[in-house]
Every structure is written in C-alpha cells, then in structure tokens.
Image (tube, rainbow, N blue to C red):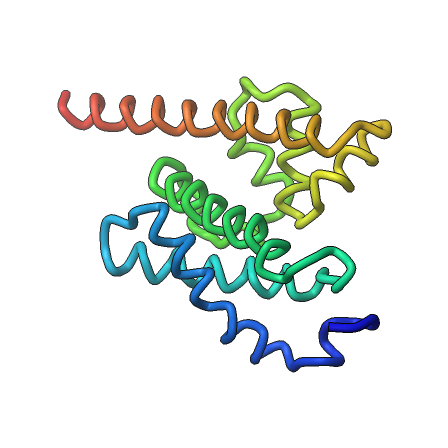
Length: 170
C-alpha cells in the first residue's frame, strides 16, 4: 500500500474481516476453556484489531504485524477483567466505571506509578505514550511497570478468591 491513511484505501469492515484469521490464531494460544470464553476472546480480539486499524500507518510495516500486540493486549485485558468480576463486587463494564471505583478495585500493593500506568493503559494509551507522560521514559519501561502491576493484580485477585472460598466453607 502506498502513502496516506490506511482507511482511505480499504473500508474498516474489510480490514477487520480480512484479519479475523489472525484474531482466531491468537485466541487459540490462550486455550479458552469453553465456547463462551472463546467467543469473548474473539470479541476482545476484534476490539484490538479495530484499535490497531485506527492507528495503523503503512510506513509502520505489515498490518498483521502491527495489529498483533493490540489484539493480544485486548484479549489479556478481557481475561483480567473477567477474573476481576469474579472476585470483586464491580458488575459494570470498566468503560462505564468511574475512575474513583477503578481506583478502589486496584490492590493497595500497587505503587503510585504502577497505578498511573495501569489507568493510562486502561484508557487506551500506548506504552510509548505512557513513557512520555511519566517523564520521558522508554516504552519498555512502561511495559515492565505494567507487567509488574498486572502480576500484583492477578495475585491480589487469587488471594481474594481463596479468602472467599475459605469463608464459604466455614
């Protein structure tokens, strides 16, 4: 494809449909436990594909290579959110939850910078953008902080699950 915006060359629906095979192959890597999980992962992957198509520029390389991390991130995010819903009382979709409620749902073990990175990521900022917001840091720094925060969130949710199951046995 030549210069210019990607969308002027091809309608968005065509881009999404042409790359659904990529979404499905990424979904298979997550080994969904049920058809419902698989369908949810595919929907999350479609969102990632849509976000990638909105930001894609042909100079950045092949679209599928560019879209892969967006798709994977949205699937991971869907998994984390579904686990969070199992272990917290939040029943709304995160995009409708006021920031104050999200802050209360995050574990207290997160540092201020980890909380900031997670919130910026939930708002759709790239690691590169987050690094810039946090004092000109590199995107790999933002990714590492986010991964560390994600691990803490998963661990906190596991602890909540164990506490809930042990209190139910009593």
